[in-house]
Structures are given as C-alpha cells and as structure tokens.
Length: 374
Ligand code: GDD
Ligand code: MG
Image (cartoon, rainbow, N blue to C red; front, side, top):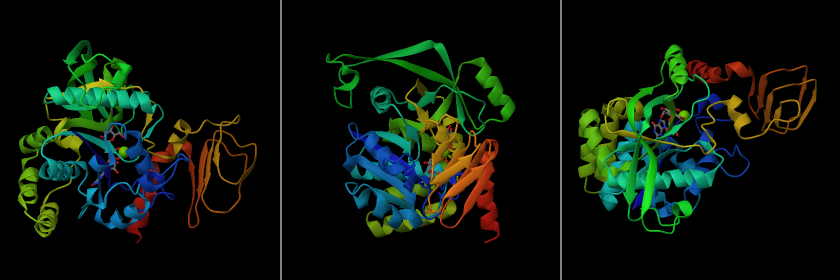
C-alpha cells in the first residue's frame, strides 16, 4: 500500500505579499487551476487514493486548510503540529501516524507547493521509486538536472556509470505503469548516492554544476514507513525518543499531550540535514518532468510564458516601454508602469511589493523585518 504525506507547514515567505502566515503559498491558486496543495494531491491520485493521503500542517493553519482543501480528504488525515519544527519531525509524526493506523507501507513525502508540468512522466518516476522502495530498504530521492548554482537546494552526487536495475514481478502502484503489459518490470535509472549536500555555499554549488555528476534534490522522498522510522532511530535518536510517547499513546487525548510535549522539547531540523546528509542508504532517480519549486516571484516564468516584451502579467495592467518584468495584481487596482525593466510588482489589497527580479530572494527578509517591527 502506498501513502502520501504532504508537507504543508511552511510560510512561503518569499511570496509575500500574496503569501501570508494565515494564507501561505500552498493555499493559493498560482497556476490558475487550483490551490497548490490540491494540485499536489490530485497530481498523484492515480497512485495514491484520497484516503491514503495525509497532510501535515501547523495547528494554526488547520482550520483554514480544512476550508480550502479538496473535501474528499478526510479531516482525520490532516495532522496538525503544535509548533513548527521543520521537516524531520513532520515526517516522523506522519510515519508514526500511518504505522499506528495501518502498519508498514510505502510513503511518498511531497512538498505542498511545487509545480510540475509533465504529470504523466512524474507519475512514471514515482511508480518506479515505489517499486524500488518496496524491494530495497533505501531512502529514495528524485534528482533534477541543475541549471544554475543555487544555494537554496540540496545537491546529490551520483555515479552515472553505476546504474542499478531492479526486476519486479508487479509494480506496487498498479500495472498501467510504463504502458508495460508484461508482469516483469525492469526498473532502471536508479543510482546509489555518493554524497548528499544540503544548501551548499555559492563556490561549492558552482563546482558541483561544473562537475556534471550532481543533481538537485527535488525535496520529494520515497521510502517504507518502517525504514524511515529506523533511520530516525539511528540518525536523529533524540527526536525519535521524544516522539515515541506519541507512538505508544493509546487514545487521542494522550496522543495530543505526547505531541505537545515532544514538540516543545525537540529542536527543529530538516530531513535533509538530519538524515539524507548522514545516511549511506540513499538512492536517486533522475527525473525530468518540468519541476519547479516556485520558490520566489521570479520563478513565475516557469509556469507562464512571457509575452513578446518578456513580461508576465497577471493583473489589470497598462504599460509603456516595460520589459522583462513580472506584474501580479490581486486587488481591483489597475497597475501602470512606464520604462520598467527586470522588475517585480505585486499588488494586493493591503500591500504593494516593488523589487528587482535579481533580488527576489530577499523578499523573505521583508517578512522578517515586518515580524520584528510587530
Ligand atoms: N508540516 C510542516 N512543518 N511542513 C513544513 C515545515 C514544518 O515545520 N517546514 C517546512 N515545511 C514544508 C514546506 O511547506 C514545504 O512544502 C516543504 O516542507 C519543504 O520545506 P522548505 O522550507 O520549502 O524547504 P527548502 O525549499 O528550503 O528545501 C527543501 O526543498 C528543496 C527543493 O525545493 C530541501 O529538501 C532541499 O534539499 C531541496 O532542494
Ligand atoms: Mg521549498
């Protein structure tokens, strides 16, 4: 059985002023189809049915999330964390919940706020990963061919010459995968990971890109529930020990108390730093399915093709001589620009952002500054 765990507790602060603490990025409809979290759920609905889909969010976002999420997701499957502790505790909480309710199974861990243009190809890669997770006790990552020396991603070093091939009688995720009607499935394109480096500095990132045998970590993971729990025991034993009282709790009241207590005592850490950088059991499957994590405003170009002037315009807009800019308006106001180049303009009902495209990452510092000023 395959379960999915959708991580939806982040703030998406680089998408201010659209993304707010009360209404973060994953709850916005950025593509024009549906809010990002629903797109994430529906993208894999042929592999993971709604009843096997779990969402982990912050307690304070839960009520709002309930009101916007696909109503076919049961409220029981929305897990609320008492406080943010980054992705490692979030993943262990979900793994323990699944383990308590159903026992072992395969777990897809997916961020709620990524964009994927080629969904059939994405499904093919996930099915392959599920097949490998079933027959091995490995931690499986999906690697993306890097295009620039980003310092905001994890990097995965692998040896292209050293391809692993698995032969499966049947795929765990149904037999329509690969359009292959025979029962023997060859799973190729799987590699052992030599090194996982989370968010390197600029110089290292440059050398990784030049070397050619590094991929970006997509932030999506596939493993058995029992395997990730064992990895926590080994690499993050303090978090595991604190969370064990949740695993053992007999009723909902005890569970809530155990969670509160554990979360208040554990230090936040991401799964990337906490486990993937440390483990020797990581595999990577390179994937090419139009992935973009839409990390900041300048990434809108990955979803919407720019017009003849290089502009991406989602607003009531009038311009003279405006080039290579991103103009996004949520309110009713008309936006007008003259002689603008390489700029981002985002207008909402109560805030206006103006920022050069090259500095889109710094929008999160505005959010920090706002918090400091109360
Ligand atoms: N429930 C919950 N609780 N979710 C969280 C928390 C938390 O405390 N913190 C983050 N998340 C969610 C975010 O909402 C997002 O969907 C996902 O977990 C990943 O967190 P990010 O904060 O966006 O991580 P990142 O972008 O810095 O880095 C990760 O993703 C990159 C690709 O986009 C890493 O896995 C990198 O290695 C990777 O390259
Ligand atoms: Mg992210």
